[in-house]
Amino acid sequence: MRVSPVVALTAVIAVFFARADSLHAAPPSGVMAATVTPSAQWIIHEVIPGERIADVADRFAVSVASIQRWNNIDSKRVLSDYTGVRLRVQTHLPGRQRDKLSYVVRDGDSWSRIAHRYDVDQNTLESTWNREVRMLHPGDRLLIWVEPGVIPKEEPPEITAADLMVPVANGAVSFGWPNGGRLLNGVMIPENPALYTVRNILHSYGSTHAIQTLQRALAAFRLKTKYDGEVLLWDMSVKRGGRFGPHHSHRSGRDVDIAIPVRPGYPPETPASDDAVDWHATWSLIKSFIDTGEVKYVFLSRQRQAALYKAAVASGATPEQLEEWIQYPRTTKYGIVRHSSGHHCHLHVRFACGPDEFECFE
Image 1 (cartoon, rainbow, N blue to C red):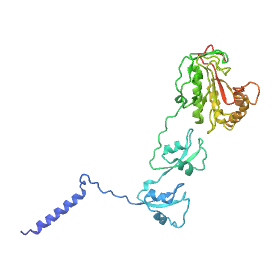
Image 2: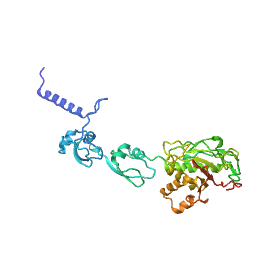
Image 3: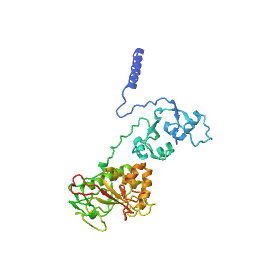
Image 4: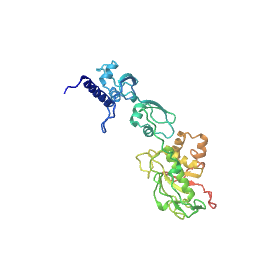
């Protein structure tokens, strides 16, 4: 059967428009629509410290040869450091340019903390981008290159001295003099490995006020110095107070012996040599006790006070403060830190009477 030309033309036109409509129709279920690649753009990339041309090529998905050609770089000439060089790059990924930050160091910052905050490699941050900075001090400026769109991680809650302390039972009261008193309802120094280690639990009893002050001072010391060595507590008092050998005092729960802090690699039990002692940490520990306002004396042999004095001077203590705090170089009994024979490897801290200790004498 013959088909008229008009009918044939109409059929062709119908097929054409059906195919045209199918190009705009949604793809069948399960079939992904074709992705349109954005056109390449020219950008200027400034090479950051430690970055190689190969790193730039990987970042912008181009070849090293292309970067060399675009920037008239002789492929036979190898430069070890392109830092600061501005390269022309034609890329489909212009948004991968990193942001350069000038960061001001804050109190409590560390390399690891800053690296975590901006999600960068710590070694690159410290040894490549800021290698001229030896130690971090508040106010120092650091350079950081961060990925586009990175939002600094939120700061963890600031740790306070109270966070490092554990509860102390109430009701333990000091009676009488340190050399002739006793302890009522004595409480044991609670376990708190974040702050200290107790050597002998049978000799670790004290008044509530003294143990609370002990923890507060040690917590402040840990937070201020970041000292992570062991702080070893020797003797305080027995449960009911009174005399126990070899001590002449320690009778009313207000005296505690603490091993002198030592440098890494030395055992905390025997800080006998000056080389073993961390004198800056030792002074910071004593200063933390003084700052409580609840310490009467810290006994330390005169021989050891000379090194302690130097550490206090290095920390910025004024002549007036040194005169008030340390007996050295005087030989008469004066100051908070005083000479007492037998106190060569440990500090003997004596606390003041608590506000509710009405029969306590200093």
